[in-house]
Image (cartoon, rainbow, N blue to C red; front, side, top):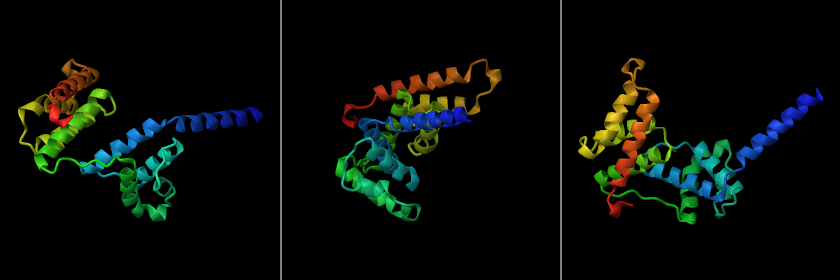
Length: 188
């Protein structure tokens, strides 16, 4: 019985340590990421906003509104988006996509491709977003064709094709890297 209790305590300590290993830079990166998601029109639930605030607070990020965001109760969740924006403003992390809708779609394509290339976004998910949310709206431009092709391959993949899903994923990562490298310098 004492052994089981010690195992539970060790497991709990390990989980707590893993959960608190986020650095200040990691927390700021997460806030930046969520800021872009929201700016590009992706839905981010209040629970994620509050958790990002809590993680940032624990990681040592300081902002006048951060503790208020991190401490919101479930009944106060509707306040999270405004408080999150206030935190971003205080930290200088607000992101505004280009006002031109086409330019905003291109900026989103480069952002998503960058995440595929750096491994922070699953290639199947990312290429699907580019195909469904961006390429269609831009009239399927030639520059996005390799990523759209990867999205089709990953979505329709079957074992009988003679190529592994992992190989198709690697091709998508390479296509994302190539697309990202062609980004005009004015958009970096």
